[in-house]
Length: 129
Image (tube, rainbow, N blue to C red; front, side, top):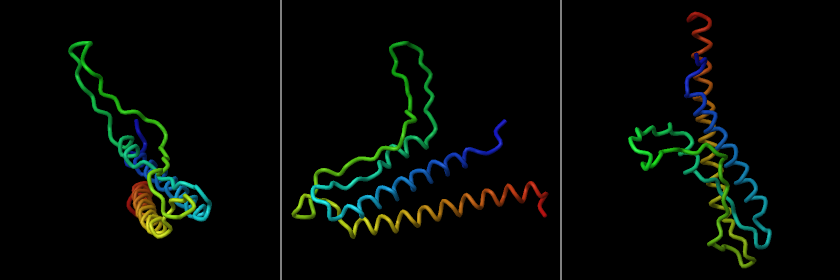
């Protein structure tokens, strides 16, 4: 028997993504003046893949492909093909600040949704009082 629905797990993964994204953006901002520093970002595709339910396929022959979705860690990758400063640094401070603001809004929305879920559970436990 599951005590919580899968919504809590999805919200947990989304909060983990948002937290890692915030740390990555903060690292980029902190290194904006470091020569040859390359900006980093979090792979959203990996997060989306992990949050979807696995695909189950009926294999009638051993030569058929198996469908599987890996459940690994979030990937942080380095943006290598751009250069904004003469010193080899590719951190665009305006873009990073914009990304941080958007991520903060996303994080707050997730927290509000999680608080709503817990409020509903508390209401059920108290018997609607």
